Length: 566
Ligand code: ATP
Ligand code: MG
Image (cartoon, rainbow, N blue to C red):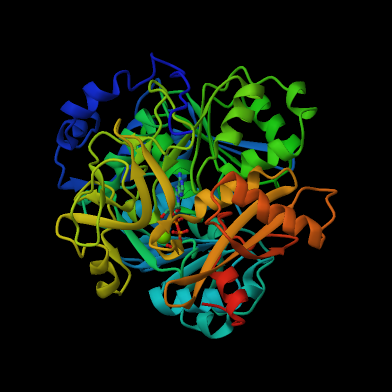
């Protein structure tokens, strides 16, 4: 499989020759694309919104297209400038100052985007939260970051712990009726109405915090990752090169705004290119997905392998009833894009989905398949221009091609996190080998420079003396005709003896039984290697997933050890 190759989709893409650009690229050159030429003094909102809003031919272009229940609201760059200036004035009037935090606890809605822009204007750190967060999770985050205010809506306010509310200065609502639980609860629209749509937006030191985001929590409890205004350089370059965005493109980033992908590529990255971001607030369904691509003439779609898997699972009838001729580029993130999904998608959409790799901490796509570069199915692609990636050993030494080790990125790059909120020790751990950021992911680089994800460091499995990534075993499991999803974990039972256990979900209509489990076990041995001895298979109705749709192995491990959480 390492040798399969799909011919490049578009030699005329923004990034025409990967090698040429990669070899000559400098981050300081890319600053020329911005209005501010001083890399030390920036404000992302000036580059993402104001420069287009102040341009007579561009100010009316759509920046945000929002759809819910069949109703569509479109905001131009000029609209977003006016609203966010008004909101910035209101926040200043409410005593907000540089460095304060504002939490966004809302279902997808335009107000999320107004808030993040208003905060960026005044140097307030915004923190988007998943609408499905529970009581304890909210309490933990509020105690950790101590926001000055939360913006929410009446349907969700009951999830916010009362004590935490009392610690706020304001509780903002996007709509009424106000619940009457806090003395400083106000309708943000009413508060902002009297204020001007002009605001003299300051430039900040480029490391000024822009947002604080708690990670998905796939491997452990989420941590508060802090990003700065200087991220804009990385947002713009990756939007152009990895997502192939241009002025006028319609990008649908089909990811929650509270996941880093939604924050970066659902807002700032397309706006820096003068492109529109489409936000769909309706629950997922395959037909809604196809209709959205057709109706909004989506040109670039950024989604997850999970979404493509759901499309594949739903069969081939629906997909041929829609017109996807506007779609010129598709990319995925979050989990490995398995070759089977690439081939299915190509067959029905006539274009190739391109896997990209990054993490909350990196702030931007770092490895990518580019539209002008051949795709090697199963690979995350190559480093983005300006990024140096390597596979390193436990002492921080780069390993030769085709050797498994930890994926590391040479520091610094513009969108690298600036801190872990109030946890300097945890922050420093990422940089324990001088000059490198350690990702915690295990990968292999082939001799052409393509990277292949093998799993997370914590998930690695030792079979005899060899380290095996769970990914390979999971892929073999998914090749079994009855298996839909699979996860493998291991536990050491005696020195050098591991107990391998698989969790699987089955395709619709397949009946779970002992015989099937035995059949799956021997299928993996025959398909992969006789050394891979799955001791146990548990059939689940549903895999535990994070809110961004990633497999939560720590829950499976906890289930296995009989504890409630790790
Ligand atoms: P936590 O750090 O709290 O456990 P998380 O790592 O899941 O949560 P994110 O920052 O959203 O939170 O996810 C980044 C991780 O997602 C990467 O470290 C990697 O393991 C995985 N990932 C991202 N893109 C890909 C990809 N293309 N292929 C495989 N894995 C990917
Ligand atoms: Mg992580």
